[in-house]
Image (cartoon, rainbow, N blue to C red; front, side, top):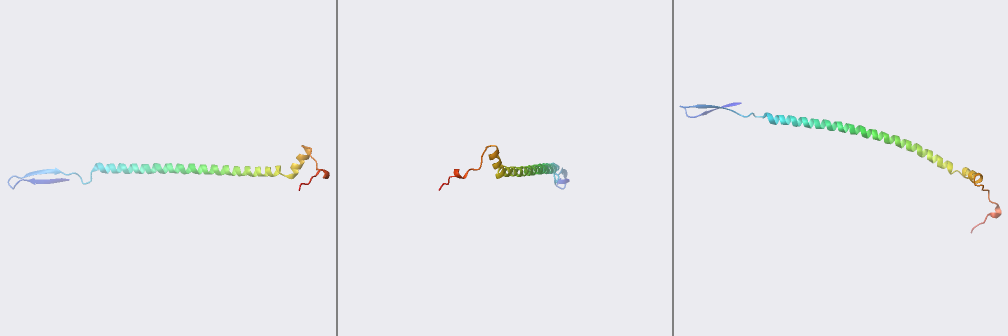
Length: 113
């Protein structure tokens, strides 16, 4: 935008034309646009990172659930094995067969008071 300035009296007039600075400077506007672009890029990158994190955590949870199910099956098998090993019939068979134990005779039984 240009502005005309008149200097002097009515006999000798000097006209000076000055160019004024624009109301909205172009450099700060570019900085603002660049800043906005950097902000949008940062938000986009954060969104991509967060999405990747979401999938990694989901995968870890599914692996943990599969491991939990496998451990529960193993625990059930071990409980069954414990019940089998503790059965009185099995213990008696081992005592009679491998260790040669017999039922005690009544005269060998001593009562403790």
